[in-house]
Image 1 (cartoon, protein in one colour):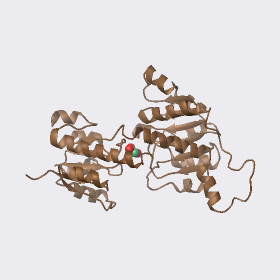
Image 2 (image 1 turned 120 degrees about the vertical axis):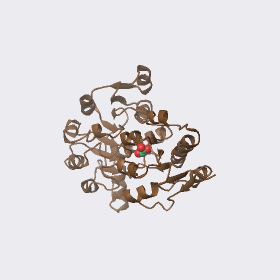
Image 3 (image 1 turned 60 degrees about the vertical axis):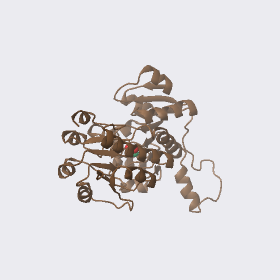
Image 4 (image 1 turned 90 degrees about the vertical axis):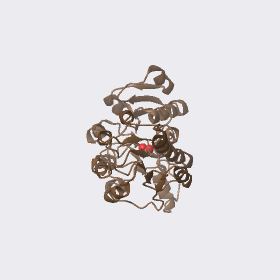
Length: 328
Ligand code: GLV
C-alpha cells in the first residue's frame, strides 16, 4: 500500500525524519533551502500533511492550491504563521508544540533579562575590541535584578515560569497583566499580583513580554507605552516580532528613555531594524529562546507525533482548531 505523502518544510533532526518515514512517504528539506511562498505551495501540492515552522506561512492562497492537505503540524508553540480561520474553513487541522519548551524558554527569558540588566554583550564587545585598559568605578554599571519589580505581559505557561524564577530565585516582586487573571492558586504559586497595563508599565523595573502575536497585540509596546516606563527600566521581548514597535524602541533606547532592552524576536525577522543594530544598550539574539538540543528535539518529535497521531488514528496530541476533528 502506498504511504500517505507528507512534506517536512525545514531541516529537522535525522531521528525525527526516520520516525516520520516509518509511516509516510516524506519529502524533506534537509538542505534547509529557503523556499518562497510559491515554492512552498508547489511542494505542498499532493501532500496530506506538513511539518512546518514559524517561518512557513500557511494562508488561504496556499490552502486553495493544495486541496489534499489535511494537517499542518507546527514545530513551535506560537502559530501566527497559520491563518487558523482559513484552515478551519477548509477543514485543515492545525497543531502546535506547547509545554515541551516552557522551562527552556523561561530560562532564556531570564538569561536575556540578566544579560540586558548587566550589560553583558556590550561589555564583552568592549573587551574583545581591546578597549579594556583599566578599572573604573562605573564601568558597565547596570541595573539590579534581585529585589526589583518584575513585570510580565502575557501570563501563559512561559510567563509563569519566568515569574517563578524571579520571585523564588531572585526575591523579585512580580506583577503581571494578561487577558484573563490567573486562578488564585496559580497566582500564589507564581507569587504574582495582577495589575492593569498602565500600572505594569509604570512600576516594572524589568518588563518581560510573553504574549501571543495577533492583530490585537500588534505594537502593544510603542512610543506611548515606552514613555510610561521608568528611565531605569529594561524591556525584554521573547514573544514575537510586531508586539513591539521596533523603530519606536530604537529611538527610546538611543534617547535613554529606558535603560536597555533584550530582544530575541523582531518585526519582519530575520531582518532587524537597522537602528537597533547601532544602539549600544540592547542585547540582540536570533530567535533562539527554545534552542537547546533536548527541547528542539522534543518540539520536532511532538510535531511528528501530531502528524502520525492524526493521519494514522485521527488522534492528534495538541490540536488547535478542534472543530476540524468533528468533521473528519
Ligand atoms: C517559538 O518562537 C515558538 O513559538 O515556539
